[in-house]
Structures are given as C-alpha cells and as structure tokens.
Amino acid sequence: MNLHGKDIKIFSGSANPELARQIAEQLDLPLGKCKVTTFSDGEISISLEESVRGSDCFIVQSTCQPVNSHLMEILILADAMRRASAASITAVIPYYGYARQDRKARARDPISAKLVANLLTVAGIDRVVTMDLHASQIQGFFDIPVDHLVGAPLLASFLRERIHGREDEFVVVSPDLGSVTRSRNFAERIGCPLAIIDKRRPKANVSEVMNIIGEIRGKKVILVDDMIDTAGTLCNAAKACVEMGGATDVYACATHGVLSGPAVDRIRESCIRELLLLDTIPLPEEKLLPSFSILSTAPLFAQAIDRIYEDKPVSPMFL
Image (tube, rainbow, N blue to C red; front, side, top):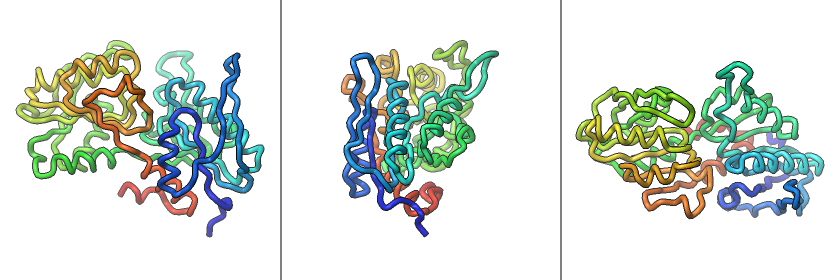
C-alpha cells in the first residue's frame, strides 16, 4: 500500500540542473519550478513557484564546488518545502561533499560528514539518495533512511561492451589498498583479473607510488576509483603501470570527477588514454578533455525515485 503523497515533484538547485532535467524526463515529469538567487551580500534566496502541498518532493543537488553554497541551497529548499506542507522531502545528492571528513584523524578534528548529515535531518529532509559515498559507513551518520546507489554497474556495463571478447587483454588495477574491494567487484563484473598498486601518501593530496602487486606486463589496464580530486593518485598510478609494470595502455574510470586544482593538467599530460566518468558532478567546458567520456546517471536515479515512491526495494537494481 502506497502511503506517500499524491504525486512526485522533482526540483533542482543550481549545482546540476541538467541532471535534474534528465531525471524528470526519465520519469515523464516536468521539472519543478523554483528560483534560486543570491543577494548582493551573498545570502541565498529560494522561491518555490508552484504548490508542493501533499506532494513527495525530490531535491536533486550535488554538494560539489562551491560546496557550502550548494549545501545551503538544499537546506533552504527543504525548509521551504516543509513549511509549504510537502508530504515528504527526499534529498537526491549524487555527490556527497565532506564525505572524506568522516573520522577524527588527529586530536580535535571535526567529523564534518556527520555534521552535514545532522544539518540535512534538522532541515526537514526525510530521506537521502546518494551515490558511491567515499566511506559507506557514512550511511550510519544519518537517523533517516539512506539509499546508497553504486555507479560501478554503469561503468562496468559500458566497458564490458567495449572489451567484449578481449577480456584477456585487460587487467583492472586498484590505485591504492583502500580501493581493493571496489576494484575486485569491478573486475568480476567485466571478467578481468585484478592487480593492486601499493603506495604511501606522505601528506594530503600528494601520493607516491611504491610497487605493483599482480602481473600487468603487456596488458591494457583499467584504473578504478570512486572519485578523482587532484588526480595525483590516478596519474601516479598510471605512470607506475607503464614504467614499472610494463602496461601497454591505461584507461581509468571513476564515479565522481571532482577535478580540483591541477587535476585537468595532470590528466592531460599523463599516459591515460581515456577517462570514463559519471555525471554526478557537472564539468565546465574548460575541464572537458577529448579523452573524457561522461555517462549519465539519470536512468539510475529515476529508477530509484520511482521505486521509493512505489514502496519497492532499491537493492534489486544492483543484483
């Protein structure tokens, strides 16, 4: 029995309106009307331009750069919807910012990922839908339901078609020990063996490749990670695969293309032939290189939204 609101309404902040439009299109719905503006002093103003009374509202908004502004938009949108008597409010956050601040690494460190979870809950959000959290245990920071989608099936399906019949030419490589489980699952999906790069990171955003565990000589390698930030880890891993491991070609894929700082220049100058990303974070034209391929997550999020509204489980989407 469906105990939800009378209908679904999809709204977007300013972070990724194109993805929101595609999700609404997949559900055969119009994108909800709202206006996001900024006052001269920097304050954000939200105006809902249609009724949400009794509706199940879904806010599509990645908390990507500028992270704080996009986060505030979600909070203000949720508050506006709650005060306008929405039946339920779901935050669809394809990329969850602050996810890497999920523990106390040093004395007096904050746990910002938990703080963001608290803010979303207090703002009146009833459920969160996100994709490939940097640490899956962040789901436990919430006191509301969290549907954690995974991007690997989209990436794997694309690559499986590309390499069909040539699986023995490729090896999936984990760029560090923390990505081994993700890479192993990915390798199983596309039917390729696994190798691991063992590295040490002397300080934040700086990585040093040490050695390769597994045989990649004469093979084409596929580097797999959840996100690419400054691309130091990725490019060092690609260099190690070619110079130390003897790989013939390097491909890479990730769910979130943060691409901050020198990332684009590093990738441009690296030996990576192709980089496959999902559209959880919109990339401006100046960051799009010819070697980039972007896959849409809209069908996946649309299916999740439909299942949530119909009270169906989300987990069968990834079996």
